[in-house]
Amino acid sequence: MEFLSNFMEFLGNLIHKFFTQYAVYVVLIIVSLKSNKNEKRIKNLEERVEELERLQ
Image (cartoon, rainbow, N blue to C red; front, side, top):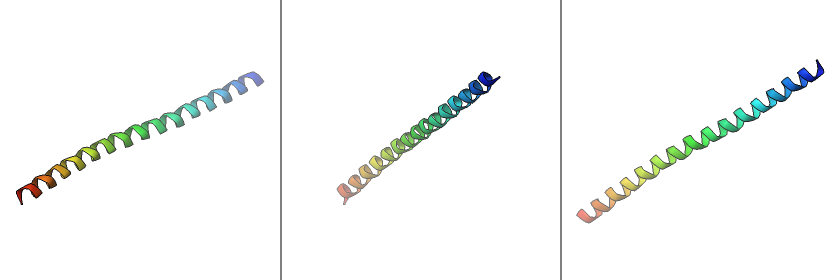
C-alpha cells in the first residue's frame, strides 16, 4: 500500500512537470509566431515609407 501511494505521487509529479514545461513551450511558440508576423508588417511599412519618400 505504501509503494502504491508513493508511485501515485511520483506519477502526479511527473505529469505536473511535463504539463508545466509543455505550457512554456506552447507559449514560446505562439510568441515567436506573433513576432515573425510583426517583423513582416514592419518590413512592409518600411518599404511603403521608402516608396513615399521616393515619390516626393
